[in-house]
Image (cartoon, rainbow, N blue to C red):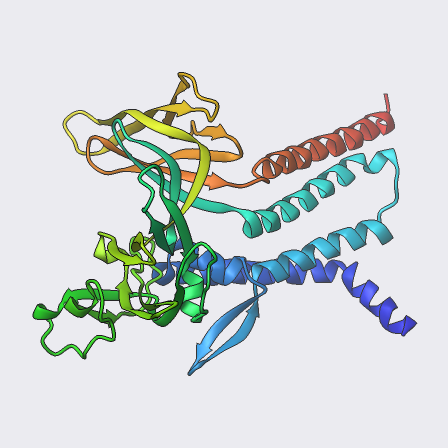
Length: 381
């Protein structure tokens, strides 16, 4: 057992392991770059870099065929830490090397943390509009809203993943159970009058009997979005309330009554609420004279704090985001002359890469100066 541990330690501190891992990472980056044409940036990150293995479909099976970013990065981190523990000796002459390697360790750890905890949303605002939430560009939720009390809405949001798993839900705030019957990660919807050959729908309430739902191939392209659809049955204490079809493509919510209460139900983009709100005061879209080429676009917004008051105005433009309460608002895109689209990112480790690169640069400078001083002392006068 001792011999096995000694061999494992020798492998982990080996420079050969470092070279092999760097070569493997180069192949991974090259493969991911080629696959980005078909999958898009987000899907490539999930498949190649935010995973322990790269999986390839063989028939109905997903087979791991290559190490992913987490595995390569984890091994590089272990290799670097073990090399320091067993090979590098403490001393002022190695100060620069130690600092540079600490920066590399921070860079690896920061990337792993970012991949695990970073959240991305979008906030779409028309001029004069105020919102206290942003929406996911990839994830959806089933929102069931109790609108009985005119003073407020009581919202129950069910993640799309629960519908996909077919999990039956009994939420205490709802007087009925939610039973997923069918789920399609991507679909097209048509009026049944325009799809005469469509099979009968299992939906018998709301818009369901009038809609033909056709499953579609899941897309991973950056400029395309999946539009899921699901059939859900609502079961109250006195029996079924019917089967309903839900999809973001329906646009408008469907309303119904149960136990003397009024509800509306819709599938929508997953929302992330915050205790403050943002108002778009003015959106500016500048182009180069005589062309349609964008020169600059910016959003003048008012940040309304939770404690009330007049708030404060901020100008958001390229490379000048708004950072507030752990979120960063970037100017991402626009829709027309009066609508802005802000990218909203939560990344607790956003400062780590800057600190890590600073530590690496400072360490290299220090090591260079140490060697330069030693060379100057040895040089004959």
